[in-house]
Image (cartoon, rainbow over all chains, first blue to last red; front, side, top):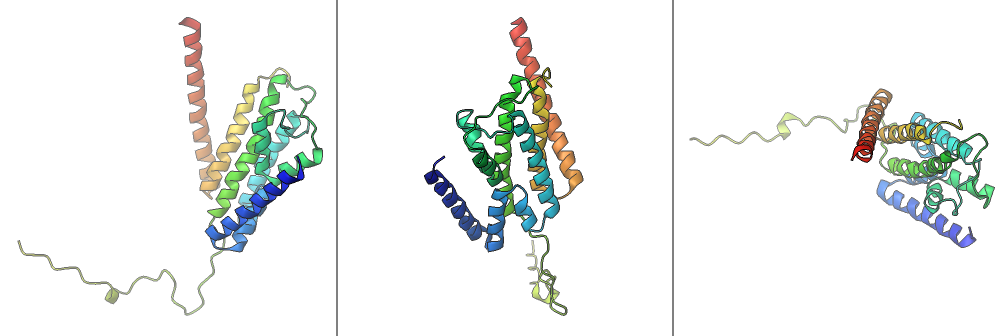
Length: 174
Length: 61
């Protein structure tokens, strides 16, 4: 992959972060959005949902490792399957592995049936696509700890005093 | 592993997908597992029934 494409991908990531900031209204959320792209589950950890983040990381990491094991620990190349190749871009970690391994084509590991090869590539692709779901979930995430109201201050969800509620309209005579 | 059909790979990947989707919806681990496995059962049943239907059609019709 040439440098021009990499710059385009980075520009897309930055534009996504800006969009996330405008939607969520906080830079912490936009940073979490970027972190979620870099590493599955990292965005949830940044937003305080560390148990969920670790769960996602373990789940997607295991699926990715299994797919890579089938594909001989080589990333999906464009020649193998262009759709699965694009799917890798859903996560920065999978993209990094693909970059580090260069343009090697995936090969079937020894002792694995050839019919497993395509599903193995599919596993790698699905991990990237599921990471996109996790990134969107970070935008919709409620923060773990809401700020506690100060002592003596009225709570935000305090009930409306009865005097403020208008009395019901009198019924019309039949 | 060389003799195992690739169809067994359906189970782990579908479970991973359903667990991730349900975990995005809910915070309760019990609810996540329950919904994911329920949906997994429905999906598998639909696939098995569909496969059986296609097999019957191709075999006798």
